[in-house]
Length: 481
Image (cartoon, rainbow, N blue to C red; front, side, top):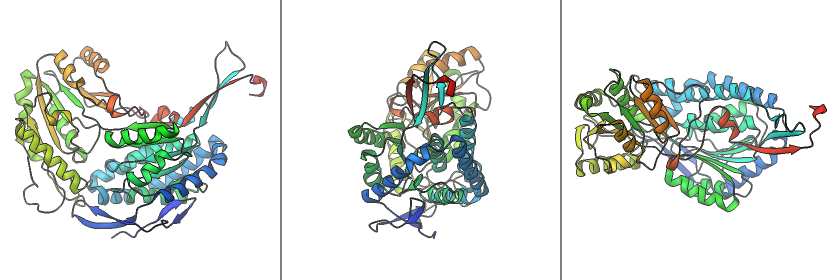
């Protein structure tokens, strides 16, 4: 079992003000793999006080010096990638090979992209030739509260901590209590990199305790949250008391539109994407809309892929999916599968219960439903597990209508060889991101959604600018530039 670490506040590891131990469960075995302390509102207050005290000096630190510290941190992070992968695999069940290839490396990928974006940013720039003595200044917003989820822990920590540091903000990070080990390792690396005390602080806790306190704290100027839509609503309401900025990256119910002219690997690619990370990704293509002439063949391909997808412990090497994060999540997914059967969707692969040969661990059978009708529960609600809903369509207009008929709007997908159609659909689909023909977004592209998926834009210039205020200045002495 991993040795317990305390909180990281004001450049030191400190115990909680009130002892409140919380076990961390290995989802592959259902056994305790670590014990952490859960913080209280008082612990959050101490971390915010440290961040507030550190803010003036950090905000006035020249950008080049902030950049140098982030670059030093990056080197440390990359030297400990295997440690990070092992922590993530243990705490939330990502298979170790996937944790090494995708989970841990998402952190340094984002850090590198932020460094590139930061180098081209202007923090004081002219308004325009019509106003030679006006300047627009970008200044750090202040103390920020960062609340991150369990499903892609380093992806989200790096997308929040890195731009906040570069912008000149000080911060309190509250990682998910389900996956705290990777964030504690991140804090160790921050300490090693030599960031000034109080710039970065970490307090473990739950949403009702530390999360709620950060959301309401009068000295916190901004909350950046990734997680469920339900929690995002609660944070927005709490933050309204102090009119702080709130950026939310929430759930999704992505549609994957597969046309008859799609490439031969489109269906297989979409199913594997859905099952990646055991379906625990907000941008998963969980609704597969297939043009009628190729629908039956697509269902057969999806069935074959699901039945050939191996499920196994996170500690085992190989290309398989691991467990979902905890018993509550497992129970919720089972409820959705049961609801799909009850409402008349055709179960073609997977289903209820543990995979064959397993009697322990939070494993879900890779599941495919066909003939799903718009409005069914499994078509409307985010399941957050390896469950795919397949829907036939006859026309492009019908596909767009089904895809957009959702409260969510994070990522949609299009598979077609018709370039004009792809361009049309990219503009018609109501989502913050559209990915087509298996091509991922480029480095520095913003990640975020619309509607109930939240409206954060994380990554690249957009991600740094979320932590900056815009100041308009007139009467600037241009001879002193």
